[in-house]
Image (cartoon, rainbow, N blue to C red):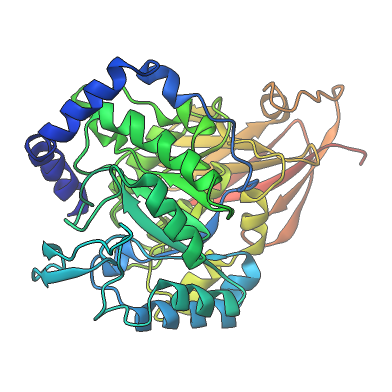
Length: 432
């Protein structure tokens, strides 16, 4: 389990980074405060809507190579996923040179950086090099993403970027990288407070537009970590993880949702981690719910399934144009809860045209329930303060079914099955 691996490595890392941490203290003695360093960068505008793409980790973990990545790019580019807006093809951990791999693909003996101090792609698994792979992905009309860690090692024991932020940023830019995820293994809080802003500055100075995804292992808030990437993230990153690694279970979908739902006041892209839709651990109803929630939360849509093997039902979820339009709405406001009752939840996301995307979520009830939303509840927020006079009517459109439902006065009620989420677009006011 990657979550357990990260926990173990952060505990072990406290021993392996003693010297590095000591160096941090020396640097901080002569530098501005750590808290100030989180906020010193202006907001980055490369991701004006939540990024959409694919990542290797959820399905393949360390078992990655250039043939696999090219085949994934082929499928995305040639089918409905690219048309739906999925752009990034991202290699996660385990791509750099390793002289000896363990059975799980983790590195037992790392290859060195080159004579210029740059990371080196593994010559066996990526013999053509990263520039050639980027060129191939770009030739398909897609963008290329890569991974590093803010520590001396990555989570899978490959070489990290600690102390080489400028060198690595220049290398990523020279390879044609468009998206960089920076993880947090083998670090402590002091190191992270240096590494993330430093990499952010280095990427901005690299001469190439590179979306910066910050994974700061907010999982460890359970044991007293007070880092809050949703607070400092807008000044350093384009998107930031808000909790631990997801796995393909209904329980974990709910846990990620619970940690994101109250972060709407913080501008930017709070990241509940990759989608698990299509990986096989949940029902289609539960996958539709995960996708619905991620869209209402304005979360990044990064597919974790093997897109070469997903069936038409899964593809119809991932490429659903009406839900994706909600996620990519230019207003960029995260949805929030407007009511809870009888195990059901109503979430609403303001849209740029002053309508609302509204989700009816049967979270806890073992049977089907009736969920109602009142028009007054939908326009009580301050994010889009248009409040039409009462009484009036609203037009309701079912987004999953992509069909009009009707025109209603005062409120609207729908029946929702266990674990199901139904999503509607509500236009208000509407002259009947």
